[in-house]
Length: 303
Image (cartoon, rainbow, N blue to C red; front, top):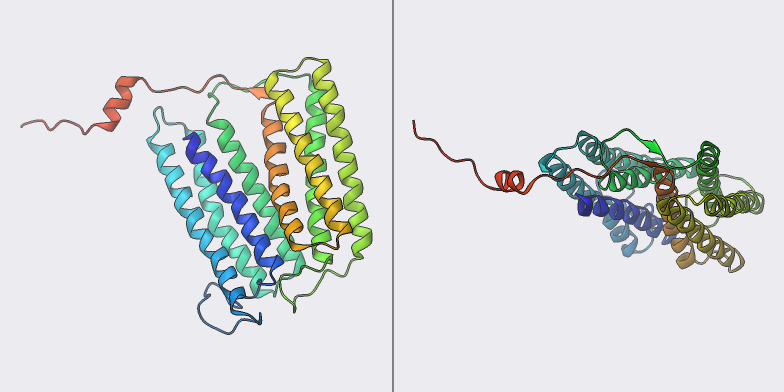
């Protein structure tokens, strides 16, 4: 189940990466219709735009296959856990909804605000997949907090700042040069102004994370919390470096792609930190006899 959950998380992160590749290569309208991609004349001038967009759409099939496999594993796990089944079903059901959002972006000719919603929906899926992965290593006991209430509130505030950072990042993208197609419109906002707002929110986020690292160390928080907040800080610092370099080098496509992947890592690391604030006991495992019984066919009785 843990391997299936990890595959689900990686697949949702890969969806963001391939979506970024579509936008950064001006292939957003490589398939100008939806859901069909094999007919019609693409807006993009080169044939490879068509295949890049088609490849991104085909990844939905991979996500559905992984989602079905994860759901089957959750249903067959002993003991069966309803929370894992529900999360697996939720993530599987979100895939076609994301496909519809992708179709709307095409039909609206890559409207930057629709693209923003599409990206933020992917961040929610990454967070949900992180929750699924975390729950595979936990039990079903009532959640018990492992840190002081004030520190928990600070972490919740930090997660709100992360949300603001991600939203402002999409606004910056909507004002910048990488529209996904040469005919796509921008949101009309001043790129310098919104970039400064985004950078200011990142400064706030990093400062708050550093404060949490110090606070958790001072109160000797559990190792899982210390590790989670330090991991998040490392991701933020790496994102900050990439962000500044891409800005001063006029937004090269390769660095923008790295920054997009870093955004998914930020969402996952934030979700993991929030989930590390409580414990729910060890994960229950089936006895060897129960596992053998589940794996072997039932005996046929004579009548």
